[in-house]
Image 1 (tube, rainbow, N blue to C red):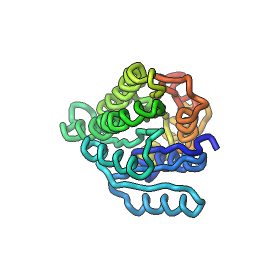
Image 2: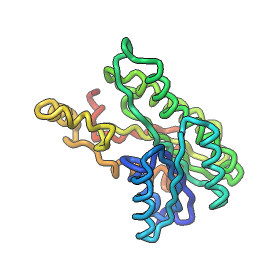
Image 3: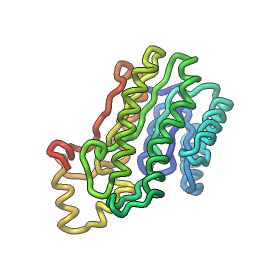
Length: 253
């Protein structure tokens, strides 16, 4: 198993892409802690399912936008397993709307959850990773960071910020054998992209027709990319943004 003996922490791990990432890391031998905001039933079900397969997975409730809570979660993982080898910053929300009508609250909520959370958890794990001279940090960005969508100025700004943070942090801590990379998913079948399916009929077909592989992605497609970047197979890759979109952005959105 690629991650035998490794300790991983995943934010936003109870459903969608995060859940698939938790499952992929645990399947490859890692002990995994994940955080969720409110859906305790989904979190507990994931823990129970993994335990039934002999995998060690634990869950913590957390508001990822709050620095003190991120620090506390990292300390709990260190108290339990003594180290953290892998951090997957996956937590994210959308509150779409045209800028002219966007409230300050909706702007700030997306920035805090999507971008500030990456700062919070990356900073919290940095010291133990630097001390052990090993670490893998993978941040979830989006193709929206480079290809503008109407009504997503807050979301695109947060995901663009993640890409900048990823590149800068990679230059800061690479000498300690810590890699920092990002993944930019396209349209993936999760609750967050349900609006794509809700378009229905010809509009949905038009969206799919714009994807080279002619399908929406699955959470497992992103989880497999995260698994690669978290493993020693990617030991010489850092500061990179890996687009996983089925060819969506080859011609732009």
